[in-house]
Image 1 (tube, rainbow, N blue to C red):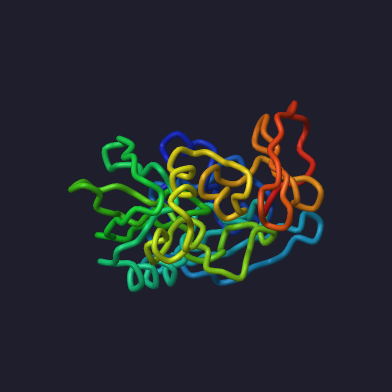
Image 2 (tube, rainbow, N blue to C red; image 1 turned 90 degrees about the vertical axis):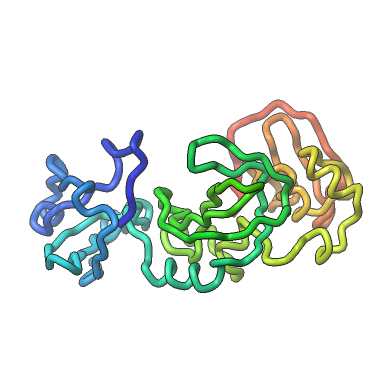
Length: 252
């Protein structure tokens, strides 16, 4: 069971006794702070045909206490699969990885800037406080520790966003991308400056600007605020300045 961020504890992680959950009584949820970091086993899952949401029954391993929680958009924001944590430790502990971000959060809440795709060493793997990225890779950067939150599996991520690749690939490379991807020095200079220019690929745009606010025309146009990137195949063919309107499609 994950620790909820301090500024979200009044609204998140609503767990109840099974009787409360079955009656729809959400007036007095159980204090989650008493259960944070405990292990529980899912004993039963029931679908509500009306809402298409699930009621998940849990048994706390060390006490036998019975709990229940309703999913929201098919997700349980309070839980991390122990198998994901075990597997992530086996895969990443002590390894060099290459984050797909310009900034890492330090343990003292100080942001540590890095170059996208630069090498860092994983020194620990722990639970985070993010439902969709419930694992934190603790990495060493210039002698200081910083945090890279990741999802190890697609658990608690909407199914529309699932892909055939491991979920953690959205956040890191396992090998130095500057030597394995074959991109030119000019491309990497644009990525480091957070610039996008014509002839960049979708993968290069995602590294430079992240996911778009929305897409149009069957994902052949990506919108970032006042900028519209038009693609020919997977390559940026033109860049327009537009007046932002209501979302039409979102990218997965």
